[in-house]
Length: 416
Image 1 (cartoon, rainbow, N blue to C red):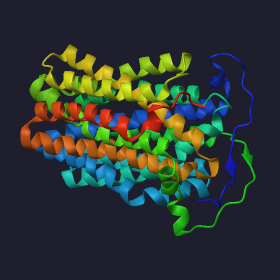
Image 2 (image 1 turned 135 degrees about the vertical axis):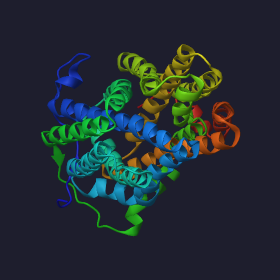
Image 3 (image 1 turned 90 degrees about the vertical axis):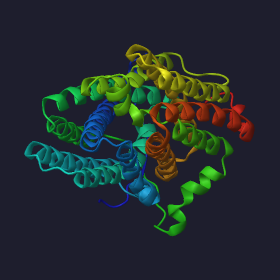
């Protein structure tokens, strides 16, 4: 990688109005690049999930897939965060996406040739998980660099909306593509990541010269110390960790699609896209009407709503009711995500955003990937429906407990 880069901050004035963010060339390039990368990830989720369950018929292997993608984050998170603060964040993202594109190309070749095996698929998941462990902290640290002053909550909502559009379209296209040919989704992923690399390359981010601290063990773990010293950030990150850890019902979607709702790969794609429909609707609301008061209370309300919707989905035997439950889960999760990301970014100095972002990414991946593992394990023991019900009730319980453990978070009034 290139030598250490100075601190990043946006200095380009934007045109007024609600669409002003998208008039900023660097913001637009980064927005589209991140959306395409997320699009590729959603296509991968459908293709890999269906392939693994089709080859094994095992809920255990579905859960193990989540653990495999989480392992690199657990091992490398602090190194990745320090890399995001020490090296050019644009180059870090490009190197990671190049590795992801190459891995997808190998999966496409193996699928078309018919020689892919379960160990090969899991090795590919590990490589993609490793690239994601480095890519996410660098990408998160770049958001304030392309967002104008006073517009971070709106910028976060817009980025999240782009991701949800990708999440809506990606799974459906992934399911359709897999139905045509097992190699088609992986070819699509390869193309998406390559285009994203080009878009990241045309970004122009203003920089202020600033000295960088030398690499050290202490510097690697500075993000952890920062999070521990801030009860509000610790509370919101850990709330997401434990709530989503218990409410990871989406890992069971292949089982629900085939065995409970009796649909196929296309149905799985639609189910995976349903949370994004709710999330997109909520991000459009938040982009226009930001949360201006009782921020902490809104956070806990959103997590409780997520748990209730999980229980509804778990007990449903109707495709339409299942889609509604998943959509509400997505909408509730969006409120939680926007509040969490805004709180973390506003409270963190730019020179530490990579390391703090790495800690946040570790918690997110722990909740998502370990949540999938937990759901798969519990489903293998007691069945898919009881596993999802227990997870939803556990999410509600965690929210109520965290309201007592982190009163400072509950009393946050505004995002400033």
